[in-house]
Image (cartoon, rainbow, N blue to C red; front, side, top):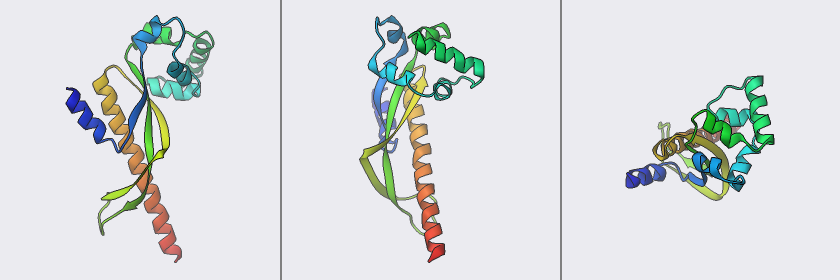
Length: 158
């Protein structure tokens, strides 16, 4: 199973897990971990989105009050969310190379020192890896679409 997960991570366009938080363990801690504390510093609407919750005023107020009381991990436990939160990094991709008539690039430059940060929640490590791969693909496509668009605009101006 771990070899399979390794292969999936390898296919994630150089994205990786920076911090991994096991919620069930976070609930048992006397003091919040630095990684969980960093998660709680996100916008409340972003936290709701990561957790798969709605962004209604009541939900955001609940998140805010739980964070202020340092009890967000307990709230997650209350809603049977005892899985994993992961802070992920996705290196910047640029200089995409396309073959004539093909939509997907055949290569690009990867800038490991410049990363986009994103968070995901999942109930299992396997699901976490799947979500990492999905989000990495989404960001990769977004990057090359943006570059393709710039190329088209600059070629039209020439």
